[in-house]
Image 1: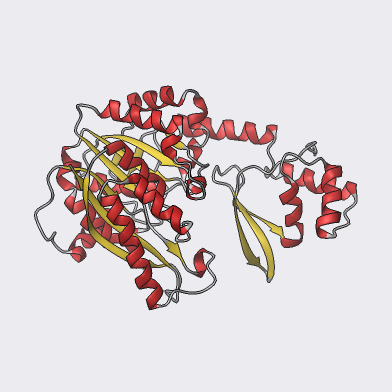
Image 2: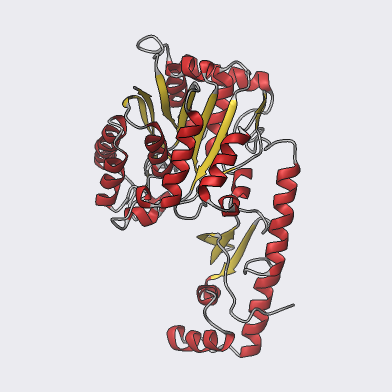
Length: 408
């Protein structure tokens, strides 16, 4: 086993868990090069922290002694780092080769298959049709005729079991636009995405009714606007990311199985933009990409979808206390303040309100909603549904979701 000179942990999703009574750091790979979940004993977590690409093994040994009081022989540290490299936890040539092979396999497949079919929703098209129809029945008929002139929507990406009626009410109002569209852009949250990224894919998105063909011309324009092929650095996230998939299924359903050209784009984290005054609107690549998209849509009947949930609060998301009824009402008021900015087409006001709160509500739908608003330009919107979905058995943690329809 080789030992990197300055070992560096590659981007992984981390979470503290209990395993067999012991506290461990769980590592999960959004690229799925690392099979399953790797568990690192809590006592060894400082070693991973020091695998930052800047420390040599000798520097790591010294830092472990000074900072953590850990006396670890250099041979033991060398062996541990070699094991991390062997397990594909560290950046290495083996990781780069594995990623290249995974990309080759993904891109050579006939389509991006539905990752959640048979798990989160039925894989059988007839059973899926019946399931979504039941959500429409539960939602009831829209309070008014399906809206005309719809240019975009906010649709949830929570599972259908919890958010089904919100999906149904949202897509009922957008049904005409969805059926008449020549192109549909879906911005989805990349829950593992790097800050400020926009990641398309050239793969068609499949649903149980068939495939929705990705518009290759739009991807070409995005690649030219981005300036290099780093646009696709996180394309593998499309394989398992659910946000676009769950919106694409409803799109295909309301179109009664008829395909339509798609532009599926994952949006990376906006955390840096909620903790500073800098915003995506000042990022040259972001602006160029949105401009390229707008140019590509000119003269075409287009529908823009932000596949986005709102707040994630409570112990299930790292907060110390479960939400009582008062906190849920406070969250409802806060969410509707955010949605007021969304309905006014005010992307900067939407981001600014979250910046004021430090985004303690953990609104994972910020990036796709912000991107959709910038693409659409001036719009008028209205909320067609809102819900707080339980995220634990005691309902002390919730995910809030909403359906918004934009016209104008």
